[in-house]
Image (tube, rainbow, N blue to C red):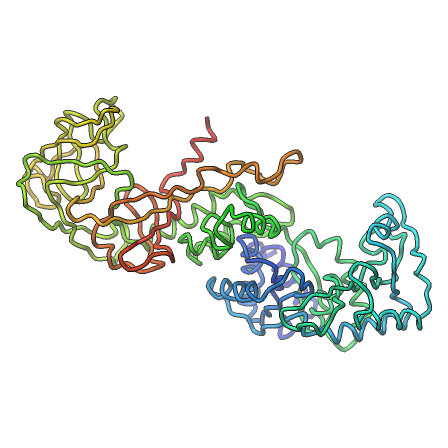
Length: 560
C-alpha cells in the first residue's frame, strides 16, 4: 500500500479500489441527500465535507438531493436553510434535485412490482404488522393479505392513490421473506397514506413512498456511483440492494451504498427531533440560537466555515460510532479566530478606576496594534483619560503572591498605556468595591522608549476609558447542557441536563473603535474571548455574542 493510499479515509479507499477494478472515473457521482425536516447541524457537516470532498478529490459532480417523502414534517423553510448552510461552508452542488421529482417513476415501478407479485396491499394496523414481523431471534408470520391477487392489489393501490382510504388504515408492502434474518427484509412498507400538502407537489399525491424505497431508486435515477450513508443504514443495505435488483438494467450504473459513523458531539444532542423540541418549547430562540449545534446557530455564534471544515477533517471518518469531544470544535474555532481577528478592549464586569495624579480634563490617544500575532491588521488610536474601567475580578484589596493583577500597594501595566499603582478603594454599604483610587507613572507609557516604559511589572490589564466608553449588550453563551451525554441516560430525559447558565446577558463597556463594526464582524476581546456582532444589532445598539472563551473553564470543572 502506497503512502498516499494510507492517508486516505476508508471511503476514499473504497472508491480507489473501484477505480482500480475498472470503474470509469467519468462515471463517479456523489450526493448529499438531507431530509428537509429541520436545520442542518454539526453532525451533517461531516457528511457534507465527506461527499463534497469526494467530489473535489475526483473532480466528480455532487448532487444536492432533498429526500422529501414526508409532508408531515418537511417545509420549504428547511430547504432554504440547508442550501444556505452548504453554500456558506464553501461547497457547490452540480444539480439541485428532489425525491419528489421521481414520485411518478416510483409509482410506475411499484405497479410493476405488484404485477410481478412482489408487492401487496395490507390492511393490518401498524401494531398488528409490528407483532406479525416477529423478533430478531424468531421468524415473522405472513400477513393474512399477503396472497391477494394481482388484480385486487392493483385496484386497492389505485384507490389508495385516489385518497379512498384514511391515514393509517392501509399500506403497500414489498413481498420478500417473513423469515429473513434481517428484520428490514420482512415485507417492508413501500407506501403509506398521508393526506397532507407537500411543500412541492401540493395535494397531487396522498400516498408517499417510504425512505428505503425512495432512496436507492433515486440514487439509481441520478446514476450516483457511491451512496454514502451513516452507520445506522448498514442493516438497510440488503434492502437497498433488493430494491435496486427490481429496476436496474444491465447497461446502467448500479449505485453502491457504503456507511460511515455519524458525528456525535459531547455536551450536545444531535437528533433533529430533540432539537425541534428545544425550539418548540422555547428553550432556545430558534434553530439559529447560538447555543444550538446547528450550522446556522454556529454561524450566528461567530464560527467560521473554515473552522467547521477543519474540525471535520481533524475528527476524521470512522467505521464505528464514537463521541467527539466538543473541546476539539472549540479548539478549531479558537485556532482560526486567533489568526483572523483584531484584538480590542472591552470590559464585561466593570469597576471604575480613578487615576488621581492624572490631570483632570486631559485625554490622549494611544497607538495600539490590532493583532500582535498576524500581519495586515494595522493599528488604531485608543483614548485614555483620568477615569477608566477595569474588570472587577482584576482587583483585590489583598491577595497572595500568585495574584498578578491589581491589589492595594502594588503595580500593574495597563495594556498599551501606563503603569498604575492601587492606593485605596471605596466600598458601598455591602462591602462591594465601587471605585479604586490609583496613581500612575507618567514616564511609563508603553512604546515611548523611556527607561520607565521598560520597567517590568508582572500583570497587564485591559481597560476602557470611562469618558469614551461605548455601552454594548454582550450575550455570554455557554454549553446548552451540563452533562457530557445528555441524551445517553435511560432513566432521565435530556431536558433534565439543561445548563441554567447557558446564557448571561450583560451590559459591557467597549472601546469606541468598535462603533463602526458591522453585523457578523468578529473580534478578540483581550483576555476575555472571541466575540461577534449579532443580527439583533442596530444603529446605536451593538449586540455581541461570545463565540468561545480564551480558556476552557469546563476542563477545570471536570478535574474537580
